[in-house]
Length: 166
Image 1 (tube, rainbow, N blue to C red):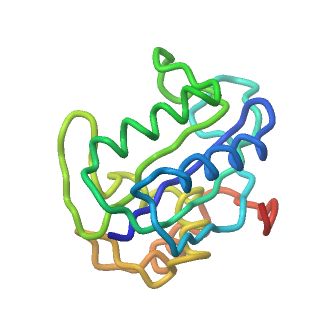
Image 2: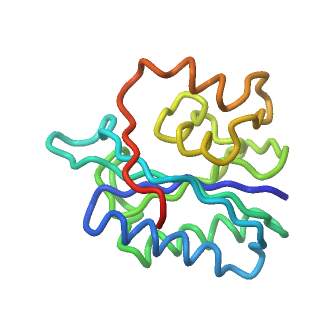
């Protein structure tokens, strides 16, 4: 099933953190090609502590075979291995953030996981990289494409292309 994750980093070696996260995700046994990776974008922090550095954001899409609970647990372990603490307040600076965006057409609502991600269509820092690789995707439960949502959000904050290749 086509599955996507959003990656973000605003502490430490931001680009290195994104690269390490993508490498670890792609190495998971149930992750299969084709692997699609967006460009990397630099964005202002939203609702973070005063003085927070800018984020680097990207999206990676891949085929995933298996249950989602083990995938979620692997993603959490990748975050922890890259320095993310689990006991932090919401919306603080972090070396890595990995959010599961969607897995095929699955709709899941439970305490640890909501798919598709409930706010991704409102987040330009997710939609812009996702549009690089899947602009015509209609997310489960939505009627608009990623491109249409992005067009609607064009006026809501700056998203600057940081790097093409990573």
